[in-house]
Image (cartoon, rainbow, N blue to C red; front, side, top):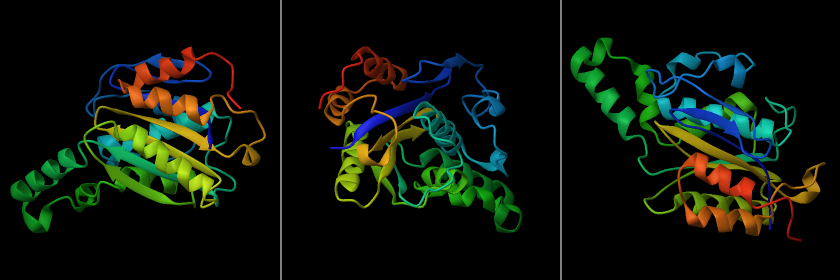
Length: 224
């Protein structure tokens, strides 16, 4: 089973790294959160302002997760690194925004940039492009404990050697939580939490900060 090496989260009040415990609070902005972007995304991110709220949350969270796992971003070699994202709401808010703009502005002057975010896979696609991920890219939806299912699928891809490292997480307009899962043979450092410990926490569910705290409260022991 793959193990956990780090996790990053953001919501409309705060953001942080689960393993290192670093983080900060921030003021609520137009997209539900507005942290100082350079604190989380120090590398240039062209057209970041056009992203919808779920895509911004995903990119923030992925950056924090990579930092927490000790991985640079964008990755120097992302060939074996993939990403899988989950969402309960899908892209409903972006759908409404797109069609409202279409009705108000018409086909000729409507903002076509809104259209790409009517695809629920857009948040993980934006993160994959920016961070140089070249492994599998998947999106899954659902209504009950979809994060646990998302992580289980990521671990299965690693076990089947379809990827050496996977970012797995859940996102939405109000925030996101992503984690770095990897085979021990592909990482220089020791894992932070075992795959079994990680899945036990995810099956309990909870808010993104709550899940991060539960992972931190396990202790330092890694189950072989």
